[in-house]
Image 1: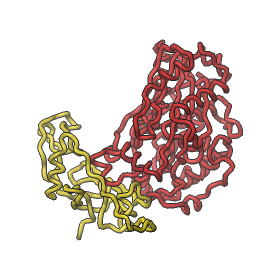
Image 2: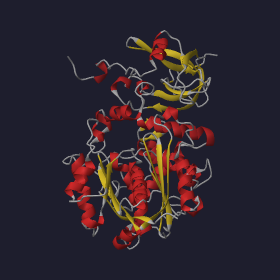
Image 3: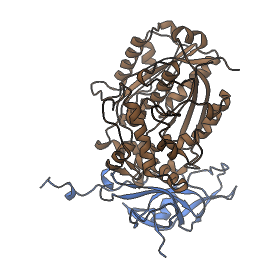
Image 4: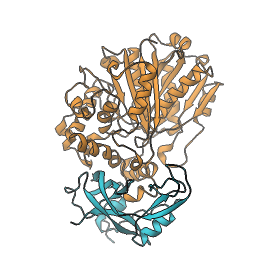
Length: 144
Length: 390
């Protein structure tokens, strides 16, 4: 077996999200390609990231709201040096903070977007990327 | 008014690679250099604050450093702890020590740190990305420390028209200072230019290699002391005139405002306690993991108008001979970033300038200055105001 070309070696799989208390439904929904946000029944606000209480009022009467999946790029960086092997095939890739239409912000990659097309304020929509047996929310430019 | 407290003695190793010394061995070397540099007797220290050793290795950290240190020093202190807040650890140590001294819990507290830095190319970037980003909601997206800091830079470019060249100016300014500091890792090298920074390897937009601090190893110690002890040890102590602390977030996407990230909030508390304004500051030492930090935090600390950080650095004001010297030891960008102890470097330099012992780079105006450090991903902030008059 030739060791000459590292590119010939399959890249390791990208990381899976760690399961954290209160977030199970979020990931199960994403795996069904549904994007949901936790909602507080006490103060009537949606928040991110999912957890077992509301960070605005500590309320624990939580339910889930289907989110629009729309947002804009709040900030970003185009990564040129892969931080770990599983991202080596992706450089340059976009690491961004997305401001959701519902208000909260989250981190994601902006997929299907040329590095010179990314900008702050770019309208984006949710898409889903397979990771192992599950899917994770990602974003891409809105198709106009 | 609160009782006078000062930084009475400081010492720092030259940043480098010390493969033969593990995390705790570096602590021992810091102590040896500190004791060689200052005439300090065991009775002069009755408190010890240390940082965990070995955190950069990613394995189990030693959280009993202060116990080993006070025993090895032959001390039985009245006050001690091993604590961690990333780069803000040492700013908070000075603050905790000052509060303890003012409460009568101690007369003088040795604050000490030593750090290693994982090599970025050998799994270190992944290790650090795991340490600083949420395991569910950030890390799976390929987080990378430069790209996390770049979120602030990109947002600043969007709101104020700041350019990548402006950030490069920060690296240029820091190198000019490092060339006057024999202890800096880049001492004896060439000056940087904006063109050289921009021509260096791209890392994560807008940062190129020279926008990033230099990962090294080292350590430092400062003695925080009551007026009685400080006046005996130092000809000119660095009096602690004000201090402020603010904790904003842990994960960068949770920051409420990337351009009001907690630095200014800590700063306002410190200025108020000092009874001083940003305009009174004759110099600033600002923690700089990346070139973005001094530019944006100079604004947050009120040292220039909002949005004018780029113009400030491009003007030359922050360089040797300028009106507002910043990071006069070279900053982590050119002095070197000593991993877990990096938050000491700007405190040591701020104190040296006020004490008048900064050698070739001694400022002519150093009556009062501001020292800002932060921990995590610009998560938690410490501001100290140091001055010559208590």
